[in-house]
Amino acid sequence: MELRVLEYFLAVAREQNFTRAAEFLHLTQPTLSRQLADLESELGKVLLVRGKRKVTLTNDGVFLRRRAEEILSLARRTVSEMKSSEEEVSGDICIGTGESEAIRSIIQAARRVHDEHPGIRFHFTSGTTEDLTDRLDSGFFDFCILFGDVDQSKYDYLSLPYTDSWGLLVPDDDPLAVRDSLEIRELWDLPLIAARQPLASGKFRKWLGKDPGELDIRDTYSLVYTGKMMVEEGMGYALSLGHIFNLAGTHLRFIPVVPELSVSLTAVWKKFQSRSRAADLFLSELEKTAAGQGSAGGA
Image 1 (cartoon, rainbow, N blue to C red):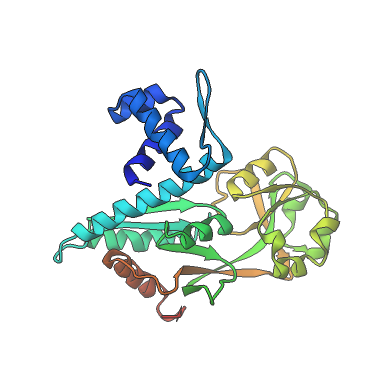
Image 2 (image 1 turned 135 degrees about the vertical axis):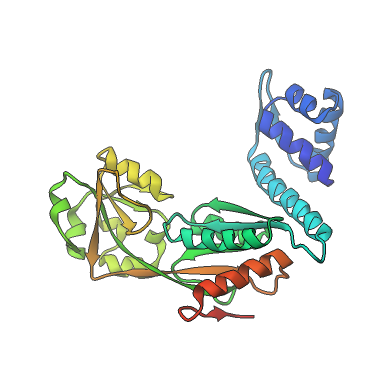
């Protein structure tokens, strides 16, 4: 499987049309069609459904599109790093993050590195912990910035000087908005909106005091910006961390829930994975951020 053919496949997946993809690639349509037919034959999978007006991906095609993006990104980064001179460090650093105001400190560290080494480029991707660690495991990310517990057997890590606590996101004209805090038991009878991933955590379920199936969890979200809009549209109250985003200018209020359930922020990277010079510089800057307040684990 050649990198060139993966580029062809991604062009067709993006354009959803062989003619437009061929024009973009400066190929003839029969050549492009033959190359992708050969790819399907090599893999033993049907990747594309060729309609009269539109090309769509099969489930195998969707899987290959994601893997192809990761493979090609890694190939480009490798070439860039190999071409980096001894005098000036350059290259790409890919970072997966959750959504939180806490990520600002990570971006500030990236800016300091960029100021010293303008040839280094940073690429941030937001997502759920599961999605991010999957891509970290596949080599797409250099680092992930995560809330909560870390699998120390799988990742090296750096504890960062930031914690957040769970609470409830409510409309500012709701009767609950006047409260300074809520007891966990008060959540049991409220219409709730929850992030999917924490519901699977034993620590989170223990904090709730009930199995999620016993609560009135009407809807779920992956990223909290969607949860915020669901609250604004009157779908319920969202279980959320308190400093995910700035509530100034919104019609929402965050109410802490007691007893408190706090989570910490951690930078993680794969064990035994060689890092580029650019990634080493960024990690050094993160260590300065955490100095005196966090500690590195692993090697």
